Every structure is written in structure tokens, then in C-alpha cells.
Image (cartoon, rainbow, N blue to C red; front, side, top):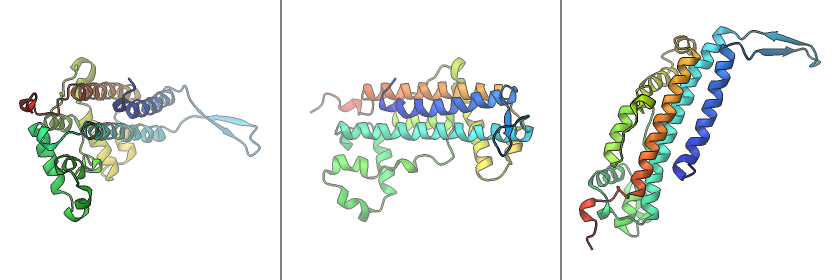
Length: 233
């Protein structure tokens, strides 16, 4: 998949997966540190400090949360980009999206957006949108389901493959504990094996990919439009 929705997601997913494979190699002893002398000749193999491995495992939650939030933020950006490229007017939007547009507009300084509005029925959709306002450390599957309802795209995934994103609350919680200093990296990293972390990573990526596929279908079907107005002049 090479659509706009998947370009950034695929790159970020690869970065995360490489880190997890490195982490697994460290914990299983397949990767070790090689210490060299000042001349760069003599080498000494050193075991990895277990405390360092805990820190590296904790850091995996930061990478995963970054992937989750970036993916959803970019996805919402793509929705608004599509509305702009299709020159959709406010009156054509489904009711849920109309509410979002009005909420976005309320956050903006009217003096700053005044000069950006020429065709109000179209420009009103975009002048209030700022993707930096979308999520702030609060993103989990529950929030994604709420977002799906607000925009009108499907939140369905195959539970057997994705766990319906249930691991996202663990990712969010650990990320916030680290970001706000509530727990040390050693505390967060001590409770999970790398194999358990890999399972979380795999399910999270599958979950996000399915949500993106749902959004892609939503855009393809133009489900952002008010169906009651379709066919009307």
C-alpha cells in the first residue's frame, strides 16, 4: 500500500520493528557489546547490563506510542486534505463532521482566521483545523473508537489479530508514566519480556493498519458526505 495514508505509517512501523528485533537480540544474548582499546585494535566482549535492557524495554513504549499518535494524527490530516482537494462545502458534510468543524472554529482567534476566509462554506472547514490539537498523550483504542464515531469511519478490526487495540491502553499508560516521571525506566521495563513486547508491537501495528484501511475505504466511498443530501442539487 503506497497511498498517502500508509506512506508515513509504513516507514514508522519499519523503524519500530527494527528496534524490537534489536532488543530481542540483546535479551537473548545474540548481540553483545564489543569494547575496544584506545588504538581500536584489542576487543573485549562485554555482557549487556540487565538494568540497561530494562531501560531499553521501557523505551519501546515511547516508540509505540509515538507510532500510534503519529498514525492517527496523520490520518485525520488526510481526511481534511481530502475534503479540501474535493472542494467539499460545509453544507455537504455529514452531521458529525459539521460538529467537529464548529468545535475547531471555536478554538481559533477570529482576527487571525478572518483573512483566510474567502468562500466561507468551504474555508470554514479548514481554517479551524490544527492537527497539533488532535491528541496529547491520551490516545488508546477507546479514544480511537470515539474518533471513528465522530468522523463516521469504521473502527472494526479482527480481534484475533489485533486484540481490538486493547494493548494501546498499556502503551499509553507506560508512556505517560515515563513522560511525566511517575515511574523510572527500570520500573516500567522490568515487567515485560521482549517476546511479550513483540506481541504487543505486532498486534498494535495490525490494529493501526486495519484502522487506516477503514479510513481509506471511508474516503473512497466519500462517507464524509451527508447521505441525505446525495443526489440533491
